[in-house]
Amino acid sequence: MTEGLDNFLGLVIFFSPCIAAFALVTFSPLRQLRQPVRLFVIGLANGAIAAFLSVLGMLRGMISSRLLLFIVGVSIVIGAFQPSGFIRIDQSKEKRRTRKEK
Image (cartoon, rainbow, N blue to C red; front, side, top):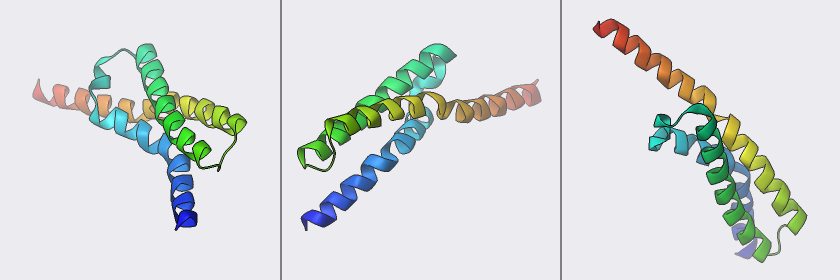
């Protein structure tokens, strides 16, 4: 049972930065922020989520403290730069809608 839990937690730690960044951009009101602030906010929130999940893995003895710092650092970068493409797509659709309405 504990091996299954460790495997599941490992998968969650691995995929959480991408899922969290996508969820923050899609379902939160962060689209209203300007671009540099948006990158920092999403990156820091993504790093906090990854830190929480990594600490759980660290308490279970799955990862070391160096790996914790690496995971948090990488997830901040992924969170900051991944969602910018999604936001641009959303903004371009909104611009097309406003042009059609005129």
